[in-house]
Figure 1: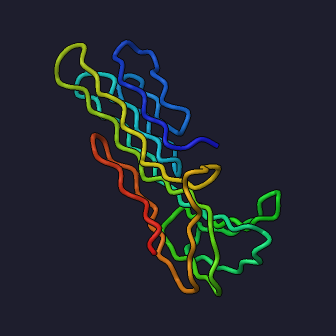
Figure 2 (figure 1 turned 90 degrees about the vertical axis):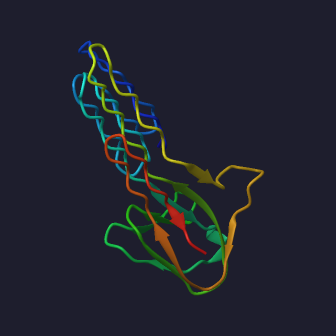
Length: 178
């Protein structure tokens, strides 16, 4: 799975401009494609004068605890889930804003991706096209030796999953509130 790819730049030559592999939207004449949902991908740029850029993709928040910790937690929000990784680690995935509640203190690895920016609108001049939207911000402790996991005490924590930006708009932050 890839996250936080930039959107493709607009083109008024009826050819697609591919977005980044992290969910970035493609740009094709005339309207830019949307960034992929829950990847933080940027929207594709508008491909003709005055053509609208695509919306950015929404973000995602993922928490993972070591299986050996015996962690017990719950999540709220109808699209948020708890699953088990192949090695037995419990994984909480937030596709929408919600809460995670812990019965005890645990250390979690995390992935937080903000919503991607919307693709630019083509200027009202011949040959002008909009630029691709930027990828959502990305922060993780997975396989990152210089970043430590997050130590949380028992209680409830708010998770905000950032929406993607509308055409020519900024994406919104994803937040794991402590």
